[in-house]
Length: 117
Image 1: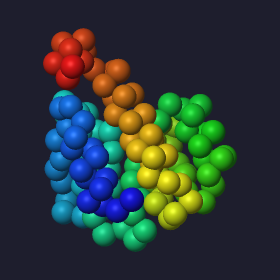
Image 2: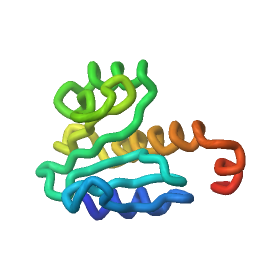
Image 3: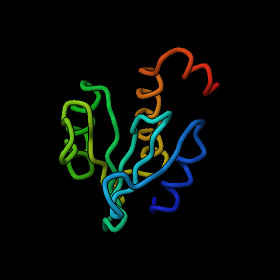
Image 4: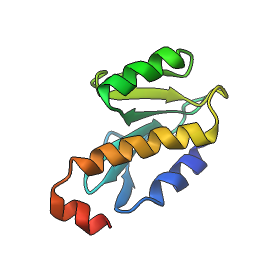
């Protein structure tokens, strides 16, 4: 996966916006104002931070130690950094993005969740 694919995949999801609130080097994707993915614009290889269920986050780190780690500058209990180094296929990477988006949506007020349907 490269950054254009990542961007296109995220923007296809209902209610998603993109921006650079932390400066021009970090692209942030939000759903109704809540962050679900961050990525460095110039990271080589591409890496991104996604929200994750705490138990699942630990499981992923154990299963993929070369590709998944606790997110830098984020709450490592709830956020993973995923490196697109070829170990994980695009379908798996998309699953991590879906999981993050779904977690954030599940935490939204009912009226916001209904608006996304």
